Length: 252
Image (cartoon, rainbow, N blue to C red; front, side):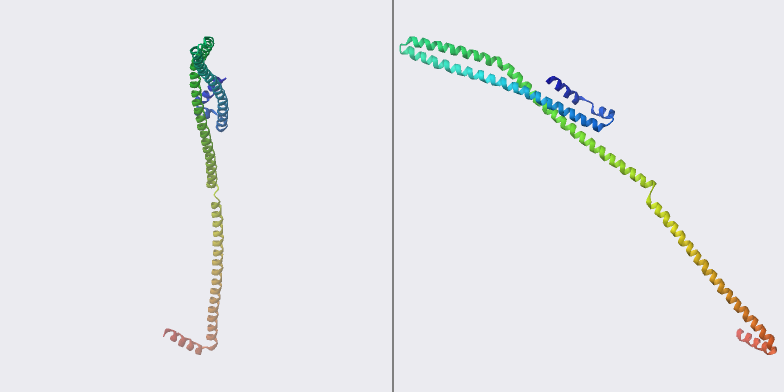
């Protein structure tokens, strides 16, 4: 079970992320799925490692119990041997022999416990080494997950910025092709033309009035000529003399 979990995590870690992203229809969804897969496998690995550590702690408890038994039976053997010596010194050989037998029994139990302790030692050392490696590997997997998550977040943010920039560029292009100021400029040009037309009309109207007044002046002059001619005709020589005097005055 643990081997399959670690194999899946290792496969994920060795995956060519760039190639996967290039071939993915939706890179963001693929990254999200990778983060989920990695997270799920790491949780499974944590559970498996926790079980391994639990087994190790049970083995350590058994080992410590065997060590304690060895120490306890050793102490009992010493105590029984001393008691046997006391009885033998007191001349009580029967009790001395009985405690010597207890000493032998305690020593046998001590030797059995020591054998157990020695037998357990290599397995405990190996299990501790495995647990240390598992913990280290789990830390690395967590680090990889952090890197993958950070990379996912970075790429997602970059994709969003790029999409926003694309929208801005599209809007700018739309402004270039449909600049509202150009329409305003054309409207302003039309107004200028209309204003120029009005000025032209005003100039035409003014020139027409000038012509009319000029014609009136011409009529007045002709009327004066006709009046003078009539006067000449009606007064005869006297009118001729007056005309000559007027002409002389004009010359002066």
